[in-house]
Length: 514
Image (tube, rainbow, N blue to C red; front, side):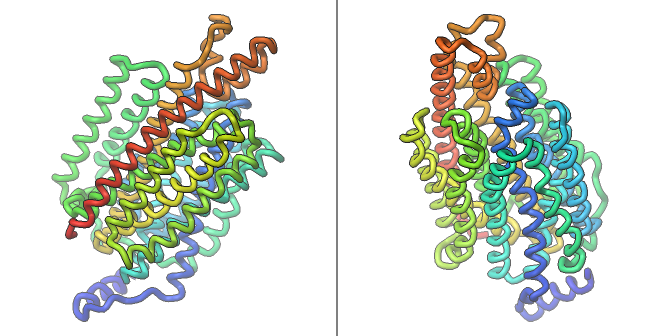
């Protein structure tokens, strides 16, 4: 396989012709898309399961945030490591190993008996997921050498992410209404089995023929750069800033600086920082991170708002999320056509502006379901469509900027931005929402000994209201709903600002030459 790739590269240099993908390559793309489907379904299914998990396991607010995004957080920290490992041992091999690990971790998550066990299972899912994400995008880069075909392939890849996200709420809603919350994790198993059965047949193996030495110190530093920073953000939002949290956050920053310095000095770095010298690569990575940052925060608070504030069932909440998630699918596919007729920077910037408009519509949300349904559907539809286009265009720019032998490393950068955006979006925007929520609660009728449990989370406050006398419960529950909506409004403002900043950065691609 490596000889074939080397010959292909030489033919391309000698003739200027790029080999086109075969029918087997397109069939293999379907298999790779299944791996992404596995991850996308899991992400949105869990968002809908938050109220059920809160009621069953009674996690604190920091624990709930960890349950939601520790997966993305661990995944983001390991993506550079796994992308580098895939370049060495083979991207297909890493993909299949990850599929097995993800399935086993999903079984553990499904039968968790306390928040700590569920967090541990999500950590294991993150480790396994880190093998899947760069492997899929890296394999696409090596299978589709023609730029136009690669753009189409990546649009299908991104559409599958949106398709999985769209299927997740409906499937999860049905499961939550008929089975226990742990069943939402078991939907991963059939996809994993299909991936293991047909992957070795349809997906060709690829690796870097001269990968260099694996650097353990870089692997450790990449994790140390991510874990302390997000932990400090989460705990500060939940309990306020302290010297201990500042010190923990500083450890992450120092580790990040040391990681960058080490990469610059290595002959074969784990993360090829030279790629960031390319304006298109640099801008694409940044816009990818900021777009997903915004979407993740909206999904985290939106699912709770629909169920615990408006009173919708999980299935009804899934149906209300469906238009926006479906828009993400169609927008991802349309992006391949848009970049042929318009400049990538114009497409990317315009998509982010559309998503910012959607976030702004969330300012019209209220505890009144009749008045809020249309603004929510339209707002999330605009966000889904905008982020769908942005994810496709930015991923294509990132992967297309790298040489084929560094496909895994480039894919790891793209997916690190993607997963870091998810983790930070939930951590930052979710923490903002909850901070405003706790600050706006009317606790005047709540006994001082119970203030902590009454204000710990939206699910906890809702459950606490059911234990109060009816004369007090109605007023307290009204306060809970209004305080959470205020938090959503503040997060929506932050989301819109982040997306507009990303749009300004993206428009610079109109003048970036390489």
